[in-house]
Image 1 (cartoon, rainbow, N blue to C red):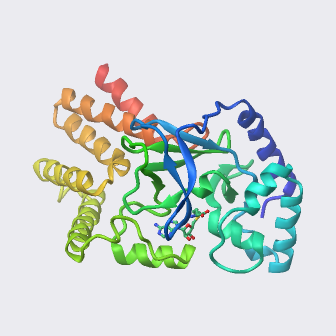
Image 2 (image 1 turned 120 degrees about the vertical axis):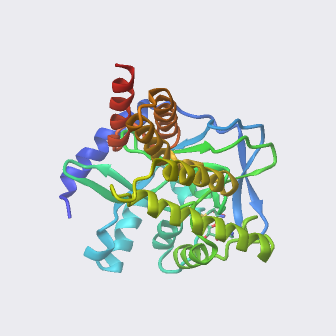
Length: 316
Ligand SMILES: C[S@@+](CC[C@H](N)C(=O)[O-])C[C@H]1O[C@@H](n2cnc3c(N)ncnc32)[C@H](O)[C@@H]1O
């Protein structure tokens, strides 16, 4: 485990950016009681697609490794110390958060509400548990209308609208990967957060759930085929047909945030096939998708740089 000094330096360095970061006013939603789910966030005004709804700063950060290095009692004491150091208003905010898994109050609050985040702390990117008390009020949906992404440079968690959200609609994010099938989702949310998901997708008819699972299984199957192409299986027409199917499934299942790699693949396929105009179109779409949903300040950006190089080559 990294020394406390290195981590403290990395975190305090990032906090300089956090303080200067653009703040997003929270007028577009309110925290209300949601039947069967505790509290949740509900939109109070129209929120257009791709709007940043919320930027939240972490109040407690802990190494993801620490449960395996410290006893539970030591861990609990550390969380209590962290809590005691917070300003009064933040402490109240944290102590009011939901609990679901048992153990000491702070241990349960962290397990129920913290996000796994990776950021650069002087060596390799390391995993941390970060508690964002405003984001923590957002419930899960298997087909969410908002997307959470961590910004390593500022340590802020950003919540962005995946589609237009109407006033009165609950704002929901996915706690796990958005392409899971029902059985996998049930297991993940039961084990990780101790709840049976009551989102629209999970309370739909068995017929609709089976249809969605079939499409998601096909999505996974096509992804595997496309990621494992060999010179022997490389057939341009087949690749384009598979990608078209991936995009159709994605539109039905709300998986668009996962498509940057598919757009990029099409860009290379068309570039390699002597069709630079089409290649440029898909390369730009890949870049746009990455910037919109994935790449953030201070995060890994290899894919974005590769696409930039391709765009430069196509222009040249
Ligand atoms: C991070 S908290 C979300 C905010 C929480 N509802 C509150 O009152 O503070 C996670 C907890 O919310 C509830 N929850 C979130 N999404 C849910 C869903 N789709 N169905 C049922 N319960 C959900 C579960 O109790 C879960 O352990």
